[in-house]
Every structure is written in C-alpha cells, then in structure tokens.
Image (cartoon, rainbow, N blue to C red; front, side, top):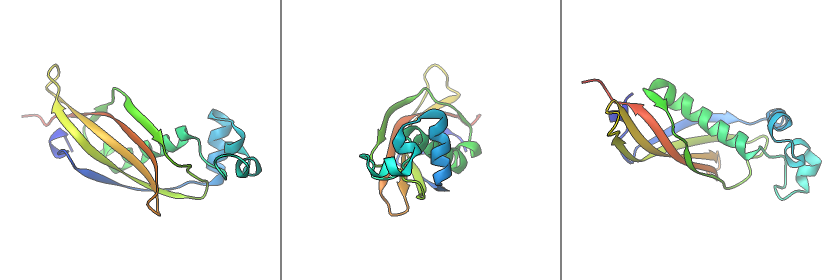
Length: 146
C-alpha cells in the first residue's frame, strides 16, 4: 500500500487486543508506577475506579494495532509526531480493545515528492464502542514510483 491507496476519509479498521491485569501491572511497574496502575485495591479507591492502564500504555496498544492493521503492509516511512493525544476514558484490565484510523487530509511533500503526508486520527475503543483514546498526528507514506 502506498500514499495513493489512502484517500481522504478512508477508515481503516483494526484487530483486537485483550489487555490483561498482568500486562497493566508489568507496564506500570516499569514505566508509570502509580498506585492505580499497580494495585487493584488502590485503583478501586482512585478516580479511575479500577485497575487501569497508563495512558501511555493505552497509546502504545493503539499504535501496535495500527502497525498490525496497515503500517507493516504499506510503504509507511515514519512520523514527525502527534499533534494531540486524548485519554478520554480509563482502559481497564480485562477489556478487549479495538481501533481504527481515519485519513483526515493528505498531500505530497513539496520538498520530497517521493513522500506523501497523511494527517490521521487514531481511535481506541472497547468492544462496547466506548471511545477510550484519540490520537491525531502525521504519517509519512511512500508515493508509488512512476
């Protein structure tokens, strides 16, 4: 898949990821060791109301799903970063997650015509359809050779 295969408005569905209690605790132990990510009892009494993934872990799951759904099957080149990351609702241990990416806009780079620039919105949801994470950013994609 190349830049030309990603029209504006295209929605790319993702597969699923089941987030276990063990994954939440292991990630938090290494990268975000706050009580509501590490301890079920502390999490129950927190604003999250239960053992929940770090927003950073939730974002990483979303990107993993994107890579598996399309990036590794495409001429994806890199990204210059994300414009906005929103952690809208807690992602709880035991939830099964899915996602999607939407092409918001696209253009070919004026300086590097071999590279298309896609503005993308990535969304992580649980299977009940609750939106948990939203990330908007740039994806560089190779243009098909003439």
